[in-house]
Length: 142
Image 1: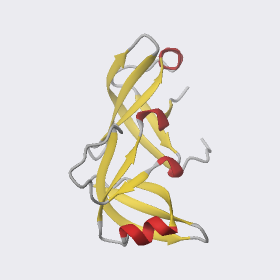
Image 2: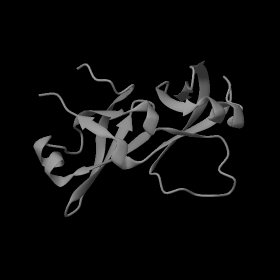
Image 3: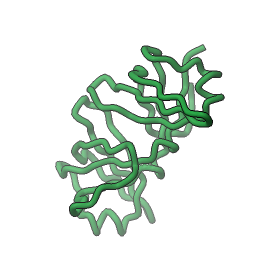
Image 4: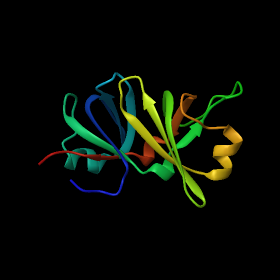
């Protein structure tokens, strides 16, 4: 599969929570982290999403927010993956920031250069990659 989404995680569906319109799907990654996807009920049925099924969860890098300090606040985004910054690749306006999770998977985020400076992002820094469940696209093998 060739897609433009930089973040592609192979995982196994650990839980399916169907609703009247949307279905919440929990995907367990090899390193133990969990990604939550919110897809339409129709998509869940079309993809035959079920516990134990292998899926690929895709998230575009611009949909990922990097947090270094929650300042005592909680946020509504379901996906909050903790890790360590491994690379900051600056561009003219934006930078790509890679955060490595405990299981070795890497999450790429596209953030402004101003944010890189404000957050003082650099390799070795602890960070959390945050994204909404609705930003996750699921793929399954035929």
